[in-house]
Amino acid sequence: MGKQTFTMIKPDAFAKGYTGAILAKIQEAGFRIVALKLTRLTAEKAAAFYAVHRERPFYQSLVEFMSSGPVVAAILEKDNAVEDFRKLIGATDPAKAEEGTIRKLYAESVERNAIHGSDSDENARIESDFFFSALERV
Ligand code: RTP
Ligand code: MG
Image (cartoon, rainbow, N blue to C red; front, side, top):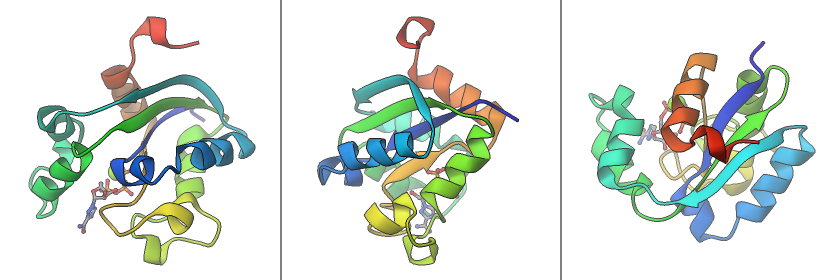
């Protein structure tokens, strides 16, 4: 079971002031924050981060949204981190997300859905390295 995952509080949730509440919920669920930063993606960086979706109809809109304002990026540690974190954030579409999940509580729509969570151990490592140097991790 992987011990780390990568997350990003997306521009919609940051702009609405949900960062503190979301980080509290993450910590209450037993995840330890091992890296954290407030940053802003250029369109080029957002396009690279979500390159796996480049053929999807929503890609251009997703890139514009993800570069529209600041994001909060973090690396989180816990046993079974990737799977447990995906459970904590809930379904991509908040209308389908379970009660109590971060997306159910804070997301606006299937695109503006408040938070990202890595979908595999390999992607967690790739995404963590995209945002953080070794010196930025504890
Ligand atoms: P994420 O990668 O951000 O954690 O989200 P996810 O795995 O739940 O969903 P994914 O399929 O990887 O999609 C990435 C992000 O693209 C936006 N999206 N828009 N308009 C649409 O139908 C649509 N579908 C996906 C969302 O911001 C989604 O989180
Ligand atoms: Mg995904």
